[in-house]
Image 1 (cartoon, rainbow, N blue to C red):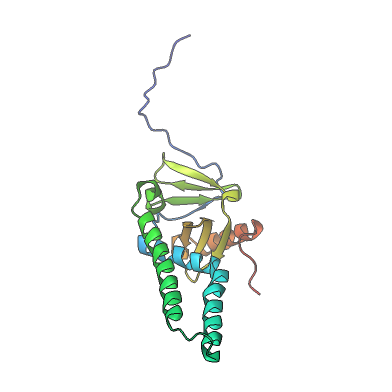
Image 2 (cartoon, rainbow, N blue to C red; image 1 turned 90 degrees about the vertical axis):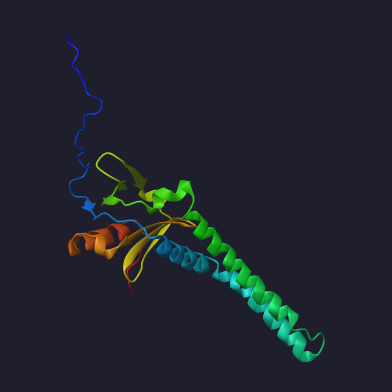
Length: 185
């Protein structure tokens, strides 16, 4: 049997697995947008812990008003502690944008979305697959869909990258079927 010569550098066109998949325009997440999204998600997820400084402020106000222990430094300490905590997380999320291991989050991708997965393509040969079970939650922003993978990891899909209104509606339906977003009431 004759051996067929093969050129390992010859490109073979990659065909999408699902012709009905939603294909988007090429998009890269801006680092400033990422920091804002990450902080908003962080504050939203940590909102229950905001009761601790509020409770400490109320307890100190009661103690100060009754004259048991008048002290204004506790107010300053609590305020400085909250500001430093938030500043720490802003620095963390800003640092993520500089790390080499997180650079793929900020590359330009073409997304192909179907019921099984999200295919993130850098070009026709390079890309990655993200299964729906990797996404913890999703929500609609005023101008985009945000899919949360973990604290600090997002897929941000602006409405403008979708090619048609039909693609937006189809993606919305997929997200509802995957229980990532709910119907507006």
